[in-house]
Length: 529
Image 1: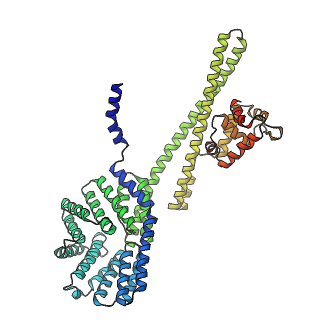
Image 2 (image 1 turned 120 degrees about the vertical axis):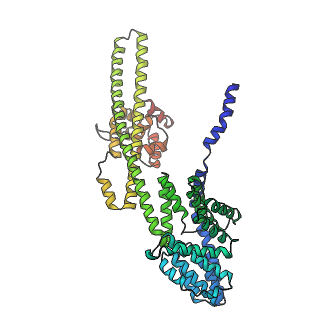
Image 3 (image 1 turned 180 degrees about the vertical axis):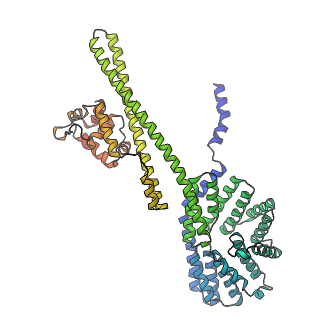
């Protein structure tokens, strides 16, 4: 006993570790929880914007209206290009000073960049009169930040092939100008970290982002998601996939809380999971990302997200095809197993017959008779067990057919009717419920040929059933047949017979009320038949 308790105590830490989710699983679980609460985050976001709209409506001057419109633009430009563009138009209408005019132009540049129109964004940015930013640090910082944003997009997705070599140099120059005036703010540290990253100093850049994360206000989700995303991508460059997934999950959570629709975190997370073989989760995440960038009209991400979605969907369908092949092989195996079971049942019935003949011939030998009776009881027990296994395997097969139908619906939804028709033209091994229950009726009556007559003997004359030979069993008789086989739980009966739970309750109550014996004993009598 002491050895047993000692072994148990030593094994507890191992069991605890085995039952604890890994950090990656925990991060993904937190992300799934945030996804389930997206409606709450969006509702809170719109309530805040309603307050800003009330502030705009109450503004008493063009300068105040411009300021309120600018705050609404800042609120929406990560969420909806259309809404952000609406407030840029208002900013243009209510510009009351050269500074406001300059900031409005910078907002137009940013809006064009997010709309995947980098060409116009670049032309507008380079046409700005920069004399107004001389001596105004705030305007200069915002001017450089917009330029960094435009050139960063052009460096990653160049539109003008003849000039694409100039974009990284221009981006580097703008970053150096920004770093020269600001390395204290989060954005300044971010620009410095990106410069270190592009120079190959990945560890230094990572440490700078980690320091920014420690300092960051944990309720400023726009700043937080940027830190987390850049940290994740650095971990990816350092080939630490687990940390990349963890930080991308955190960044995606911050995106949902902000809320943002132009996010890249969920896209990168889906692609990372896809590369790791988690196709189901990758497919779900890329769909959410594609839906959001489409709803927000972020053209810069739509094409890339669409391609990724198609790629992941194709891989997922290939995996599903492999599963279907495994399922078909399993069904063939089950059919062979069923054939063996039926053969064993036939052998069992023959043995039972032989034992009955032997019992009649050896009535004077009590010992031999007892032995034969025990063998017969055991054979019947085996027979019933085989019947139940047959039914359980068959119902499992039908459930898998339903799953296959779900796959067909997904093909129709995601790939169109041509792909669906191609899938439907493939040879199919599946059958339907009617065929299954026909086999069930035949099998059951083959084992209990007098079951209907025995049931009628328990019922009043007006309630008895007339079931011609070879016809299908009525639903009431089939419910009693399932009870006879030991399944007396109504939800399981409803699931097995593919009917509603209320139908099972109604028929059971009706049969009990029409029984000749006390209604509380009716089903016990059925089991004893």
